[in-house]
Image 1 (cartoon, rainbow, N blue to C red):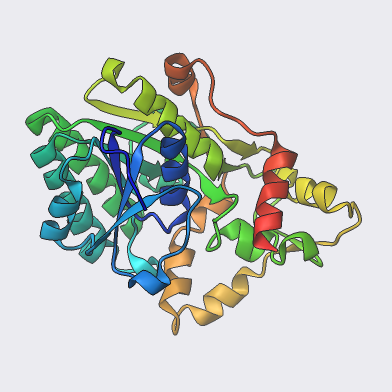
Image 2 (cartoon, rainbow, N blue to C red):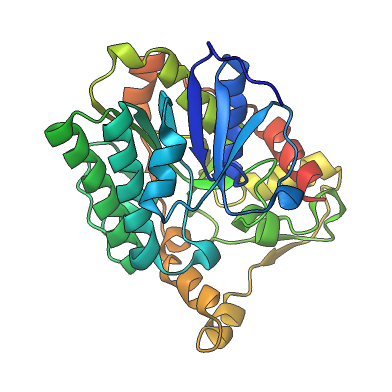
Length: 321
């Protein structure tokens, strides 16, 4: 595919993932050339609605990241350890490679953050200044990742745009609580599963809205501090049944059964399946309310990109089914 040599380049680490692909789409609409680092052979690279400059390599290899970053204005760090495992072994080195490449080429790092940096001791509404007190291994790693980015901006002048968000859902989000548990089967779901008790709130992030948020921040990046971290409110399920109600409305089945998610299955499988152990570590996010205060984001952008709940749920269901 041809590429505009005069267009700014965004290197996407994790293009085939939900958030990496969504941010790439939002940036492509703004005229960016999209470059991607991948281990996949050419025959296994999925098509996109925009041209992609594929580069062979691995985000865990510093030389590969640096070579792919040459000439890039942005580096989107959209990669996570495969299999929801090896967080300390892989996540920290991959981010260190991104930071080193960004420093070398003068690129801005876009970093999708999450709520793992908080804990069950955090208040129900968290802002950018809420103390980060993770109580889990993954949360501690995510905190160290944020600290690496802060240090890179403070000591080395690396520009960073980080946005924290809740659980992903939407087109392209296949390995998610929404697609695999809450509304398994998409538009053909025979029941919906409630993951929290009634009255327990949960933060959801519709990925296209989050991606558009990053793109709008890139639009005004010259006016932002070197290290910018903002919270994305997304779709907050305040009652514990807002999302299940939306699924039933969209499917057109207000009588669709709502069942309680069988957490006991995860407990029984945890001794034998690492993914189950890793998922259980974050169960606290389903046992108590946690909402993200987006006042600072709104003050910067004027408004948070926001698709109506039923429209977002319909897009997620259609993609899942």
